[in-house]
Image (cartoon, rainbow, N blue to C red; front, side, top):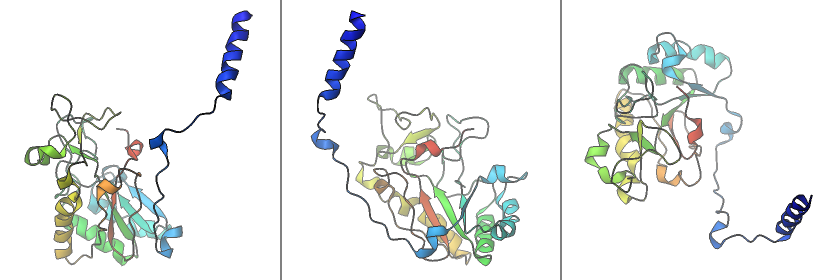
Length: 243
């Protein structure tokens, strides 16, 4: 009884002590975004291409676009369409968020021509397309780990490391304190977009550098014209699909 009474008194005393925020705990200033009116009630439909159809390809998924448009979908969100890393791969198929080559389309899903055809058909039906572009880490066997090793977060021993607090053994965390990494979008997403544009398919990519997303989570890319808009993954890492 005495012990319980003492515990109660201590808890009551602690509750009465005012708690002051540390100097660095002040909330960050809000980010003001201006979105076009059509985005306010737009319907987004996410497609995991390899699980969406029995064939698991972009060409097969394209056959469903007319049905999706009839359902009232406005935007098709394609999960990452790049080749998947082999080193530390999760499961037999691997995660599409372990990107081995930002400049290519995963051959298991199809070709650049298939992607261009998918986008062209979506545009014909009045749909927009979002490409899920992974900005906060890459596959461990991505060539960037060799050509730009300083772009990656390292352990005290100098080894590549997964994002903090995860068990994602298939990816290496980017270090956005490195100035050369900040315009990664222009280096890695732009060339693929240019090749799709060469196929006479309109491609619109917002110039929103990934390092600006890491502090505030994933933000919507503004879509001011019909086309393809790149969605960069910020700190919303819990959205990664389970395998």
